Image (cartoon, rainbow, N blue to C red; front, top):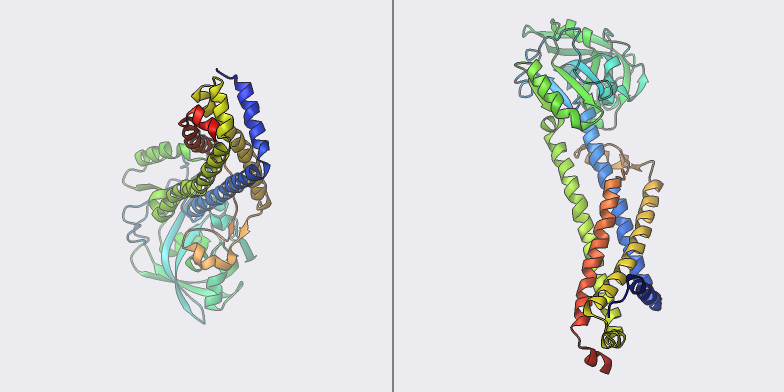
Length: 405
């Protein structure tokens, strides 16, 4: 006897409501597990994309052009000239922006202290692609590429016991190999996401720094894109154009952040299988109990001519219906939890620790539609797989033996 799918579905729904308490607890477990995975996966993605964005915004860009050997020995001697008319060969809709800079190691001195820093000459109009273009500034920002003042990080200013409007002395190496020393007035103090950036970088106008080092050259060009798919095409064209220079993507420049970005993908699946693995054990135990309580019922159906595959189909369908309901509610619950964290989680009290991972002070969850669809599909598949064991176990019992129980 082959029962129609509609009848099997009705039997499955009836059996779910026959044991409301047990199935309700199982349904609650599915909702909690799926909701937790959705919520946690959004936090993992938030961590992943925040880390990548921080690496790109840290004066790196998606692609950077450098003189050979600059990374090993960063000095003004490892520089190159750039035509004023040069622009990246990228469509406007794909290009977020680009910036040509001079970055040299330097020593900065106040009346109270001395520190080693990275002295960076910038054109403020180009720096919307980096963190310095969006930071809060106490005082004034640099006006243009010829601005002769400096922008200092708040943490560095505290170490040097100085402030906006005060003067500092900076010493660096000129293009001729001799030391150059000059006094600068502080235009403002910038407040970056991490104190590490504030202590590391001091900014001035790129024209000013070129005059100080005595050469109209650049040490780096950073290019930021709106999306990654054009990255490889861009890098290939830049390698062809800038013969003799190094063209590196952000993964090569920030290998630690790139490794953590890849690890976040693995962390998503590890967390999912931990949560759903525990759920599957509970689902199997509940279904075994439910099926063994209905041995006489299923034995009678088999005695009346119902085939073994019909029994298996009924048990699997019952599990699938329960799983579908739980997954739907779980995804909705997880989504609401993510929406409640829309403004992000403040991590500033652990700023020093999270900076080591390239994260910023606020973690904003990033829910991806692909992840949610994958969670839903994999959960239903696991539910079906988990129901096969009790279903196959019950069909091994002969109808007459089942009727005697």
